[in-house]
Amino acid sequence: MRILLSNDDGVHSPGLVALFEGLGGLGVLEVVAPDRDHSGASNALTLSRPLTVEEHPNGFHSVDGTPTDCVHLAVNGLFDQPFDRVVSGINTHANLGDDIIYSGTVAAATEGRHLGLPAIAVSLVNDGHFHYDTAARVVRLLLEDKRALALGPRSILNVNVPDLPWHELSGIQVTRLGHRERAEGAVPMTCPRGKQRYWIGAAGRGGDAGPGTDFHAVREGYVSITPVHVDMTRYEALPGLRDWVDGLEGARGATS
Image (tube, rainbow, N blue to C red; front, side, top):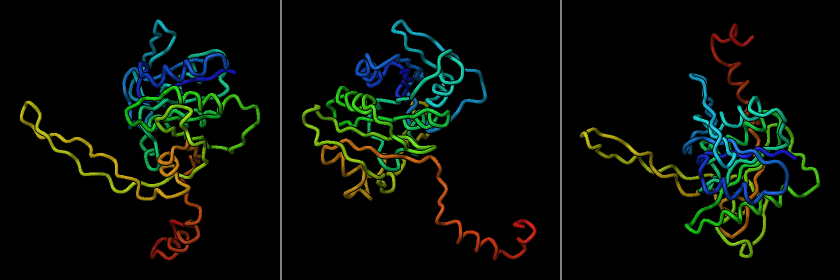
């Protein structure tokens, strides 16, 4: 088995190193990750300039681009042999609920899926203990199982692991994405040159975070595994939207 590892925290992230070490012996592992932190990059793809790839003494490769760039280059040009799957992480913080819209960790996994490979995004719900080894062990458990898991097209697994020792985990739960409350306001500051600047405000708390959600699972000490479908079409809204569009005055030529 050939596994591509990537992330959004950068090639020197301790979570990436822990993932590489934790999956040792499962097959051929290749690492292609951003040369710096790209948290919040989502699915951005660099199209305005060429990208530089550097190989490090430990065999890891870094790219001066986004997580999506890394997976795209790795699968479509850097290596002669094809990969069997993509694993993105271990992210330094949680990717719960709406976080996945912004997450470069999840984006790296979805890029792998776009290119036809089964993919997992894994994040540590960090409370300051940094039990990356627990998260790596969870991923290894998922990959070692020989049973085929059919998620369907355009789907990945989003895994969030409580920041606990392995023996303190409550178990594993299959969950749906919860939803956060509105983000906190932007934080103004003045730079040394006297100009006004802003920090993006902190993410909102879990508003929809009850039983069955990823928020609830990790709060109770469970590993959360959520199947995520990249097709964002809201199919149940299509009939009503068609009726509404059909009723627009002057739209007959545009909708025929």
